[in-house]
Length: 103
Image 1 (tube, rainbow, N blue to C red):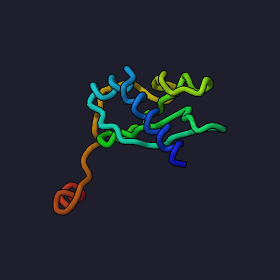
Image 2 (cartoon, rainbow, N blue to C red):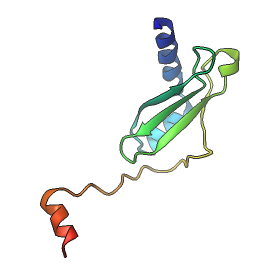
Image 3 (cartoon, rainbow, N blue to C red):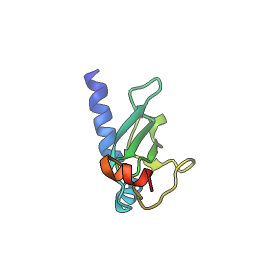
Image 4 (cartoon, helix red, strand yellow):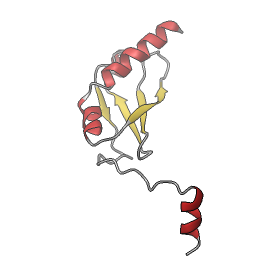
């Protein structure tokens, strides 16, 4: 288990240095670790990161997974748009909520 954790840590370090990850950070996304998917090996083939600002989830594919590596990552753009981070409207609380609910 410890060896797998080390591999995931190494894989994550490679992922966060890939150009697609950097492009999302430049678009002001605040990315937090998410899900790690593996198959029959301890090498992850996909990892997700969630933006803490807009709640969008970004999936990254490990293109070198079949060879047992984790140096070649790219953003899976099938369900993801590469766009500027736009936080959702703030939650209404307290009197602000009451004022907005009752004109």
